[in-house]
Amino acid sequence: MDRRPLGRSELVIEPLVLGGNVFGWTVDEKQGFDILDAYVDAGFTAIDTAEGYPNWVPGNPPGMSETIIGKWLKARGNRDKVHIFTKVNSANKRGGLKAEAVSKGIEASLQRLQTDYVDLYFSHWPDPEAEHEETLGAYDPLVRSGRVRVIGASNYTAEMVKAANETAVIKSLPRYEVLQPRFNLYDRAEFEALHEVVTSEEIGTVVYYSLASGFLTGKYRSKADFGKSPRGGGIERYLDSKGERILAALDQVAKANDATPAEVSLAWLVAQPGVSAPIASATSVEQVQSLAKGVRLKLSDEDLRLLTDAGK
Ligand SMILES: NC(=O)c1ccc[n+]([C@@H]2O[C@H](COP(=O)([O-])OP(=O)(O)OC[C@H]3O[C@@H](n4cnc5c(N)ncnc54)[C@H](OP(=O)(O)O)[C@@H]3O)[C@@H](O)[C@H]2O)c1
Image (tube, rainbow, N blue to C red; front, side, top):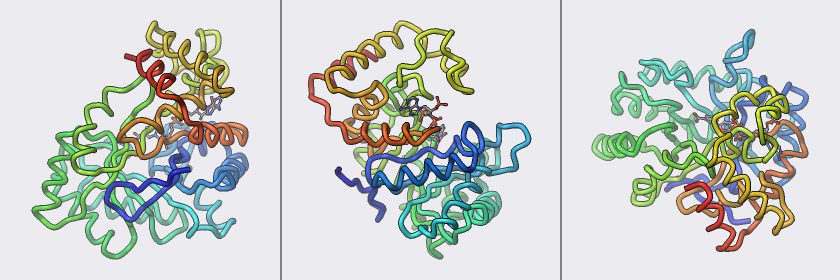
């Protein structure tokens, strides 16, 4: 499997990041440990979480996903063998990327993760109240002291990334080496709009909702299927003619490659120019094994074209 550098940074990973938003939501601590073990056993290292995962579940303490991952890191004693990605300003708050919020955010995340550094720290959502100079200026001492190795930005437009990275050059501050936009066979616009900046500035991308929250696994074909997961209700927006075309193409390519639609969806993402790695979550060990198979699957140019055309 080809390992991939993330931007111009020192980070190099296999092309699959494990999504952590399910820990404390659709997955409890015990299942979480099994999933994390299966993921590293399959040869991968990068785990994506956030201070806000999954704070939308009533009664959850803040940052439960980080807490579960932190307990697992401690129990396994494997901190130096994995890459931990986390994020600040998960609540998409005005002021959430101001200097004080960043310095408080990282300390709380490090405490929950039971570690003294994170490999990649993302601005989770843009903050219209914080100037890039203030946010990057808050990251600067964290990078210099080694508490954060590399910084990234999620849900930023191309204009925001360009402006932030220009500020980084002018003020000698760290630049965003990695972006985390939404991208999958169905949802393409956000990533496509970033393509030029990602290529010209050599920025890495780890893309989220790789399976469109489960839709691209093919298990939801009508509203009657929504009960298959606690998150099934979020799938409704994909049940249209474009979604049907994509599922038909996935079924065809999956059959020809002795694979599942989920695996084909990931294989397509891994083959897209500008994608460093897809992020996907799992709720069972079997799903992790399927994600691993998917990112290792090589599709023919003809299969890739069929899938690309189905979602246009
Ligand atoms: N930066 C951001 O703003 C942002 C936003 C959202 C997500 N993210 C990141 O991206 C990660 C992935 O997002 P996501 O988990 O929401 O969506 P996803 O990866 O598109 O969907 C994953 C879900 O699909 C189901 N699934 C996975 N493999 C399967 C298989 N082989 N067969 C059948 N079902 C399967 C599982 O749910 P069920 O078993 O419950 O069906 C799993 O939780 C998150 O964990 C998070 O780290 C980032």
